[in-house]
Length: 81
Image (cartoon, rainbow, N blue to C red; front, side, top):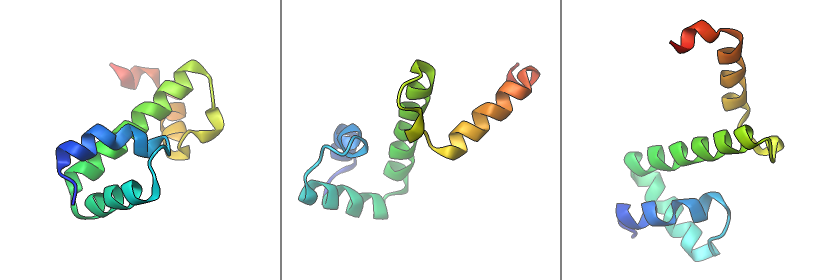
């Protein structure tokens, strides 16, 4: 099984769909058992979605929950302080 450091090194490859089937299986196996790594990968996905949104590219792939949360923040800018 992969170590947490190996998951961290390969997380962006997983998110981008650039891992082979066996590597993807090993990553998902580790993520099924490791809450910390699941949180890390989720944060990386969020960061990637926000970067796409900021650049205006590939908006159709942005997580709908993130899009809705950002829209709510834009409606209530005073909450940002």
